[in-house]
Structure formats: structure tokens, C-alpha cells
Image (cartoon, rainbow, N blue to C red; front, side, top):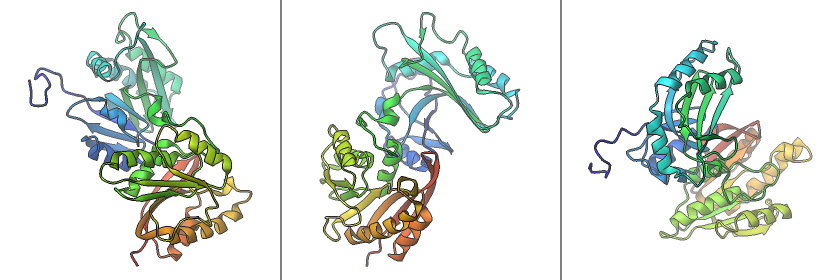
Amino acid sequence: MSRSGRPTDDKPLPPLYAMTHGGIESTAADEITRDLGGEVKKTARGLVVFRMEQLTDKVLSLRTTEDVFLMAWGSDSLTYKAEDLDTLRTWTARKPDWEHLFKLHHKIRPKTKGRPTYHIVCQMQGEHGFRRADARTAFTEGLAGKIPNGWHYNNENAWLEIWLTIYSKTAVCGVRLSDRTMRHRTYKLDHVAASLRPTVAAAMVRLAGIGPGMTVLDPFCGAGTILAEALDVAEQRSKAGKVRVVGGDIDPNAVFVTSQNLENVGRADLARWDATALPLETASVDRIVSNPPFGKQLSSIEKIGPLYEAAAEEWDRVLKPGGRAVLLAMEHEGLKRVLQSHRWAQVRQTRIRLLGQPSVLSVWNKPEW
């Protein structure tokens, strides 16, 4: 046996990769490195490739990733031509040790009762000299004879899924270890319009740097996704010092939906309020994490400026000197202008797409004095 507890004749663990929401790759890489102990080898748009010394179900606890895979093969040299189909077919057939990958998958996802089921997924973005249907056919042909006899193909909730993802010049193929609950979460029972993706909310909470004893505020809580992710961090920090999570919304339905979604997550202080007149004491909050309303949610785009100005007055009042805010907004320039008028300093900016629209995730520090 080796020091790690693995038999010395074990085959080496292949790389893993995580799919992320575009724009939060660096935050996901930080989580993989710091919390999982992984070694990040490469990042690309929506993708983080990493290695682990050992494979455990801890990979399923990642909060900022949409899915995690065992890598079968990867390439960043597609030609955009039809000849790429031969490459996809050949690499799928010859490069991976499928038997080894399946055994590793079974370690993390033990087989349930009944006949084993599998599913083949092909995703493609960008212009190529072939259709997605053509890529899927080539991929399926490469997998011929690799799936054990007796396994049943199933489109819904298959035990084992093999994915091919093509984006521009990049193609990556792997065995999915996660399931839909990684990206959708089990707590998300109800939704409101423009509800935030949990993995993006988790990235925002991580960027906030929540520590023991802090008070965290979301003044526009919506369906409570940010609050839920903050409560997850609060639970992790509870032994070192309680974290208080506070949120509210002007919409009574949003407050109700939030209370439902948080029922099995943890306790937050919830209230129906006007975010431009918060019922909170001055300098009582350590972190603000929020996705404020954007123009298309209001009756007119002209209303967003006054809303941001009034909300920023309250943020500046309740946030402690030296405190931090992590904000996600489509109308970033207007938000930036308002916050800079309060002498807040932007320390990070990341462009992402929110509900198909370009948005900016920004991190701000309030001055100490």
C-alpha cells in the first residue's frame, strides 16, 4: 500500500474537469484549490481542468461548478472543418481507458438497483463545418463496444453519462460524476422572475470573503439564492463564530419564496422592506452580496438610476468602514458611477451573461474612514 492508502498497482487517476458559468472560472479554480486540495492545470471559458491525489465524493461538494467530470480526452486544436469528425470518433475509440473510468465513476456513484442505465450527451457552441447531430453520431460510433453489454440506454436520470462538449476550437470528453443537484441545488423549490443561478450566487459569496462573526446582507433577496449560499458558508464557519445572514425584498411573494427555499438550509433574518430605507443600524453590516434589479425588470430603464442612487446611500450607511460588497448588475456603469461617488473602490470586475444578457460581477471595498 502507498502512504495515501491506495494500492501501489492502482492505475493513475486521470484529470478531472469542472464546467462553470462563463466568467467565474477563476473563483471555481480557487475553490478547487483551497477547499478540495486540487491542482488546477488549465482554465478556459466555462472550464477548469484539475488533478487530485485521490478521488472522493468531496468533489460533489463544490458550490461554484455546474458539473464535474472524469476526463476521457481533451483538445484545443479543432479545425472547424468536417475532418474534425474523424478526430472525435478516433480519439473517443482509442485514447481513453473506458473500463478504468467506469470503475472510478462507480466508486463515487454506486450502482442502484435494477438494470444499469447510461446516456450520451453532445453539446456544441460556435460555427463548425458539421452539425451537432454529426458530432454526436461520430461520438457514438467511437463509443461502440465500450459500454458493457446489458446496459440500457436512458435519456432521463441515467446512472452513467458520457459527455462530449465542443466550444470553438476546444473539445472535451468525460464521464459525469455530478448530477443535476450540483447546479440546481436541492433547496431551490420555488423561483421568482430572474432568479439567480446558484453557482453564480456561490461565486459571489466566495468573493465576499465571509468570516466568523460577520453580518451578511442581501437587500434585494429575490428567491433567496444568495442567502442560501451564504448560509452554507455560515454553517462551515459556525464553530469559529456565528455568521448572521440578513435579507429582504419589497415584493412580499419574494420574501415568502425565500422563506420556503431556506426552510431546509438554515435560519436567516428575513423582512419585507424598501431597500432604499433599510431598517438596519448604521455600520451594522460587514458584507453586502446582491443582484440588484436591472432596467428590464422595472417599468422603464430610466428608473434604474434613481433606484441605484437611493440604494447606494443605504448601502454606504449600513456597511461598516472597510466592509466589502459583491454586486451583479447589467447597468454596471451607472452602478459604478454611484458607488464611486461614495469613494468606494472597485477591486475586481468580471463579465458574465445573466439571463442571456451581458452583466458585470464587481467587488467593492468601502474606505476605512
